[in-house]
Length: 318
Image (tube, rainbow, N blue to C red):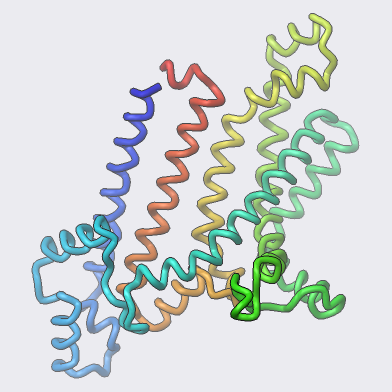
């Protein structure tokens, strides 16, 4: 197990290193200098030169890459062009909304997907299976931003159960609180979870149906176990490998892909930060946020690999 974790950790570090090179190189390949991109076409040469000196763009690319990565490893980031504050402070502030939103959406996704997927598999080729598959296909086809607008029209405009957008904050001193914050994230979480739950439910159903056809399941049934007992004791654990793969990718997607839903609900999360940084040509923020999101994806894949070994001991033995 220790060797397995060491190999996965080495792959994790190597992938992060490659991702940092790619992120840095993409910004280096922009036409002109980054200062010209930030200031626009009407900028004077003097202002471009001043901004290049401020951002350290007058130094060699290798030196700037080393300074950037070294700062990240020390928890130190450059100041945002638009906000004038370190990008780390901006990112941490916005993650206080995006991470709870992604966690709520992922929780709803897993509960709905596992329940519907197992229900459909246990009624394979019957009415319940057909109904779940039809509903999941509809969920995949509906864009989450359109579903978010429908939720706003129903629960905010018509029923007045929740506000149509905005975030009151997590502290009661600011007029918010834990309950108010969670309430503001319910509709965004549901709109994000609808599509993801539909995808994961279909994957769960297919995986469970495939495992139920294996010889060891028939042996368990022959020994006297009921269909439900064989399902919960033997089938689910063996069917979890592909489900974990998709679920891990979905959580990374929820963290990195909330920009549209956060814009619909006017949530000041990491998605809106990226959107505003791109609109303001704040490449310093864009670079650090993209690196963070790449790190989240790599970290989630690392966790999924570890969960593989927990679910299936054959993997860590191999």
